[in-house]
Image (cartoon, rainbow, N blue to C red; front, top):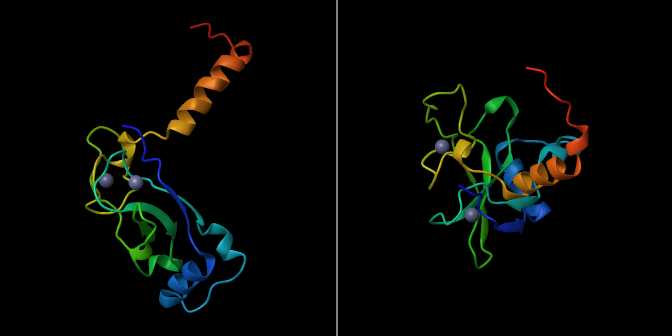
Amino acid sequence: MRQCIATAAAPPEQLLVAILAEQSCVSTSDLKYATFDLRCELGLWHEGEHADHVWEWEDGMAPPLWARWTADGLLRFECLSWCEAPHLTRDEVCTLFQDHPREHSWNVADPRIEALRRRVLAEGAGWIPNRLD
Ligand SMILES: [Zn+2]
Ligand SMILES: [Zn+2]
């Protein structure tokens, strides 16, 4: 399944306030790990709000912080636990939140990554080493 294509921008002041609400201080260097350019991580055509993981607390003190937004631009922040669904065949965890709509992350493909993979394979075909097996 393809990944949702919704994007949004997290207002820096609002994200900082959301972080400080749980964590008493945050350094400028820590903020480089925050996500300001939001891209929905859910599977395409999901129900409800879009979602992007924006912040991981120090020492896992609270569930991860997610930005949730609607098609008409209403944006909020919410702490949501990780999805705990076990992958049936691989040792892989879902990188979405608990009770998320649509597919688990291992079944959601980013079309930009797939397009890049195809382009690199097409343009760099001569660089791929021949396998002798
Ligand atoms: Zn979405
Ligand atoms: Zn999941």
